[in-house]
Each structure stands twice: as structure tokens, then as C-alpha cells.
Length: 405
Image 1 (cartoon, rainbow, N blue to C red):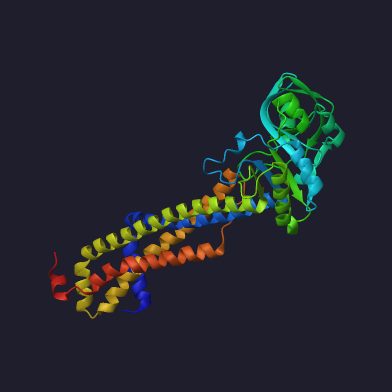
Image 2 (image 1 turned 180 degrees about the horizontal axis):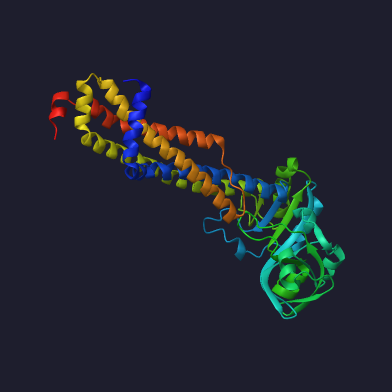
């Protein structure tokens, strides 16, 4: 029996039972589709995270209260009140690897303009905030150092807050109320969009941190310090200088644990990548289980097919078919079934990736490599799980097969 004829026989056998073949291949379809979707989501998420962090700047640093051992009993940065504006001033004066600093506090509040109101995040920052975060003002101006020092009641709106409160009307010079306190709108930030699904950066209002301390929060400490290093190359040097200055500021004895922690964008990006990799690993495990189940399904249905076609096998052997011809025929049926499932799975995975892109609002990335690997493994599954039924068929005794009822 030549190869082409064997292929035709295998295809006819599969298409005689279209529904059974489709249901048998379902595990392969789901498994391959899950592999494609998982890889594309992982690659897309990686690119999106990199884009977001690059937009914020690779030389961006954060000082938070509380020690680095946040997973133990020492953490709880939010409960520490040991960061003061004087710490930020000392960092700027004594750290030559630091370019800009911005003391920062935040809260959420109801904002009212006329008969409209909006619940949003309020960030108290310094006049250097736009330089640190690489965030330009689209309309109006940002507050200056004098306004920060005086604790003036001025506000710069995120684009979404501006749209919801003013609905396209000019907001510059208008008075809004934050916790019933009047603020004059002096600017609107350019639109940034959602930050990888974590939060909407346009849904915020920025005011001088001194104003936020006195008027909204009633505190004298600050919650964090945003810092930009002189360059990405000097980021590590900046961290070392900041830690040295703050240990002196806080009178921390040699060998004692710091009551603050300094993190940079690289560390945050690394943490995000680790979380992403764990998720991808779990999804990949589910996909592998689906492929395994699909392979078992193929082996099961091929064993049923061998039992149903025992007389056919006997007839073919009696007219000259060799063991390797029978083995090849049934093995080919399993491979074709698995590969067809793989092709449908690839289409499913690509479609799912496109759908996720639309829902999530960021682009997934379907790589040619993942498609080739998924297709290759679908063929391997067919070979591995189709071999035993094919081998069993090839070892049937022709006489017993012809007698089988």
C-alpha cells in the first residue's frame, strides 16, 4: 500500500465519523488554543508593562516608609509616619546623583463642580512632579514652587476628571470643591490612559502637597518621595546616596534595620514580570493538561476504531498488507486527527488573543514561534498516543480477524 493511498484511507475513516472525530480532537483544540493564547497574552503583557515603565522613566525612584521586610511583621508602609518634607530637602541637597524630588501624599475625595460631582484620587505633589513623571500639561499651567510653599488652593486636573466635570467646556479658572474646600483649576494634564489595567492615570487631581497636608489630610508627614536620578546609569548610585542620607536623617544606628525603603522602576518591573510569569506558568499547566487529555481521547477512540475494523484489518492482511502498512495507516489516522485539532486550536488561540486585546485594551502578541511549536506538539501528541492502538492493530492475527463478528 503506497503512502498516498494510506493517507486517503485514513482521511476517509476520519470523515466517516465527523462528529466523533471532532469531539475526539476537542482536547487538542482546547490545549493548543490555550497554548497560543497564553503565550500571546504573556508576550503582550510583557510589551505593555515595558511600554508603561519606559513612559514613566527608567531613572524613577520611590522612597516609602517602612522596612523592606514587608512580608513579615516589619512591613506596613502605610502605618509609618516617619517621612518628613525635611527628608526630601536633605536628599535634594546632599545627593548629587538626584535630579528632582517630589514629596507626595494622596487620598480619595468627592469633587464637586456646580451640580456635577466625581469621586477621584487626589495627589499632593511638588512643582517638579511633571518633570519626574514625564507628564506634560495639555491646557493651562502647572503650579510653581511659590504656590507649593504658600500651600495655595490650586488644582491640575487629569483629563478624565476634566471631561466628567466640565464636559468639554473650558475649565481653566473655574472653582471646584474638594471635600467642600474651594480650589482654582489652573491646568489640565495630557491624556495618559489606563496603566496596564491597574489604574486609570487620567482619573486624578494634582494639588500642592503642602495644601493636601494642611487642608485635606491634617498631617505634617509625607507618605512617599518621588525622585528622578540624573541618569539611568546613576540610578544605583542615587539609591545608595539616598539610603545614606536618610539613615543619618532618621538617626539609624549602624547595623539597625532601615525604617524606609527605596525602590526603582527596574525592581518594580521585575516584580511585575515575576507575577506575570507565575500566571503564564499556571495557564500553561492547564494547557498541557488539556493536551494530555486530548491525547488520551485520541488513544481511546483509536482503540475503539481498531475494534470496529478488525474484519477490515483481516481482509487487508489476507490480500497482502504487511504489519507496517497497518501500523502506518492507524498511526497516520491519529496524527491527522491530532494535527487537524492543532490547526483548529491555532485558529481558536489567535481568535481568543484578538478578543482579549479588545477587552483588555492592550495588544496581545501572537508569535510565529508559538504557532509552529503548538503545531509541532499536536503532531507529537498524535504519534505518542496513536502508536499503541496502531501497534495493536498491526499485531492482529489475520485468521482471527477474519473470524471476528
